[in-house]
Length: 135
Ligand code: HEM
Image (cartoon, rainbow, N blue to C red):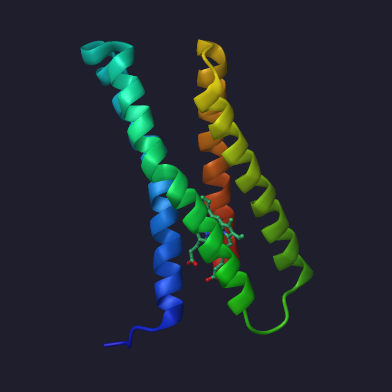
C-alpha cells in the first residue's frame, strides 16, 4: 500500500471542505421544499442555521488548505496556472459574497437568486480546482 504522507492529508482536507461546502448546498436545496411543506419557515430557518455552522468552517478550511497547496507546489508555475488560480480565487470570493447576501436577505427573489448564484459559483470553483490539480 502507498504510505500516507502530508500531501495526501492536505488533499484529503481540501476535498473534505469542498464536499461539505458544495455538496451541502446541493443537499440543502434538495431538502428545503419538503421541509418547508412539513415545518414551514421555522424548519427551513433551523436547517439554514445548522448548515451555516458547518459550511463556513469548511469554507475557511478550503482557503487554508488551498493556500497550503500553493505554498507546497514545487517547480515553476506557468502563467496559465496562475491565471486559472486567479479566476478560481475570484469565484471563491463571489461564492462567499453570494452566500452572505443569501443569508442576510429577507426578500424571497433575492434569497433565491443569491442561493442559485452561490451554488453556480461554488461549482465553478470546484471545477477550476480539478483543472489546477491536473495543471
Ligand atoms: C469552497 C471553495 C473551494 C472548493 C470547492 C475547491 C475545490 C477544489 C478541488 C475539488 C480541487 C481538486 C482536488 C485535488 O485533487 O487536489 C482543488 C484543488 C486546488 N485548490 Fe481548491 N477549492 C476551493 C477553494 C480554494 C481556495 C480558496 C484556494 C486557494 C487559496 C484553492 C486552491 C487550490 C489549489 C492550489 C488546488 C490544486 C491542488 C493540487 O494541485 O494538489 N482552493 N480545489
